Image (cartoon, rainbow, N blue to C red; front, top):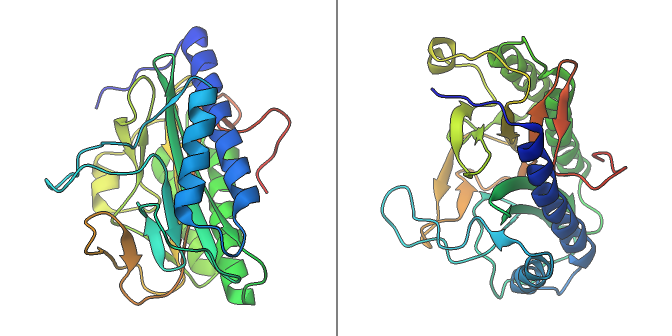
Length: 264
């Protein structure tokens, strides 16, 4: 793996991209009401990106196994859909949970983040799923500091999720990020033999897109017939939180938040 800490100038550009991501996420969460379509969320995201001088990281991305390029500018995944949901005519309903993943490029640098939120009232167990996944992301912010092995952070994420009675998804993971959306290193939310073999030390100035993905039931997922949308095999809900972070001496600083805004 080749990991390059970012310069102060690069970090300011990543922060500018991250602020666009955060603004889009806030706007889409506010829009997500019963009757609003996922395609309407997509249209508003595109409008905001264009207005802020940014472009989508996702639109046209090739499928890793040779399928059609991704057709949307953001990913909108509902209930049992974990990630890569394609925006379209589906109307959001009361009691849904909606995961929105936004990635942009601005002035040559990237920001990537995701949130899951409830539309109206949801069952207590679903609320706990969303809360636990947000708490898993908070582990990264608190624990991913310079001099720490990533495996120790991943172990804490996995333990938190297991204590809550949920499952960490093992088919997907986070990634390094910078002038490209995907850079070294891979950033899993669980400990495996591969991670033990390829573990890495967190270095001040390195940038990561960490993204806990958590299922209410089993960890197993599959792709739908559309070639992109990933759903839980057992049909139970899933949640997804992500931020772009820069590693500091005492914590991981999120770059995909609006000034003064803390993760809920």
